[in-house]
Image 1 (cartoon, rainbow, N blue to C red):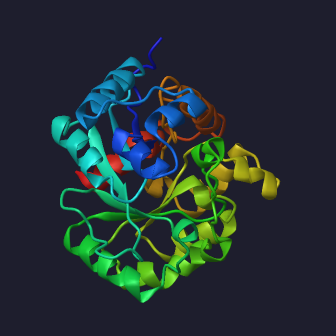
Image 2 (tube, one colour; image 1 turned 30 degrees about the vertical axis):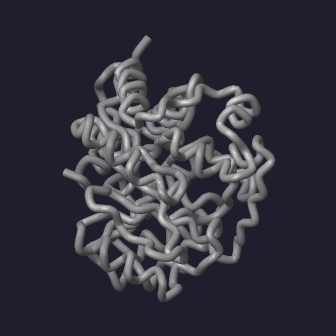
Image 3 (cartoon, one colour; image 1 turned 120 degrees about the horizontal axis):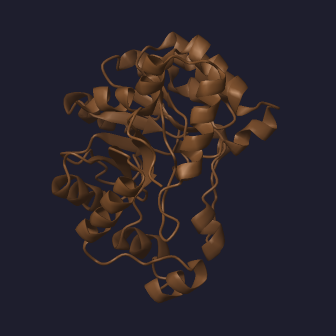
Length: 291
């Protein structure tokens, strides 16, 4: 049964695993047939608009109004831009960019670029990042910065190495950057993914920093927290105006992970969060960023 449309939902964190994504991920070592056999997932068609149609139908099934689609590997910007162009009222387009790669740039039409410092082993304060931030500011583009614990389940399933470097994962490293670019919205996913205290400090000091609520938030095991405490503290420090709901959905046949929304709705209800504030978290803040 679909969720009721009130309060409306806009998902700020959906991975768009296009055919191009799988081609780039497998590289020279894994064919598409190898990947499909190892994962047991539905391999998308070569046309990203077909995958966008699948996602649009899936969101309809769950009464989700819009979603931010993330091109989850550098070089796949065209896939999410094609999805956005085909369904401009349904999708926002995010794309992963590696500032250390030659020619790294903000593709026109993106709503956000996604930086993964630990994955690509650079400091967010590296001089190579600044040209991207200048471009993002000029394009009125948000910057999504993954901090904290980073595990990529698909890489593990495929036997691909994940030589990430946690030295570059602290949200506080973003502090001088967020101050230098006050007009750029910065989004830190998963409440900081294990750096919750630091993420709260950053957002408290920088009004252009948003926290996304996505995934199971399994990082809570490191801090002995529960989701109710996390939301309560985030609402107290950051306020409802800078929290963005996300599911971290990614592949088919699993589709959209409805349980994430249900759990978070239960938490917000148990905390007595007003309906108006719940609306901000579930859709209002994301839509306001890109209206």
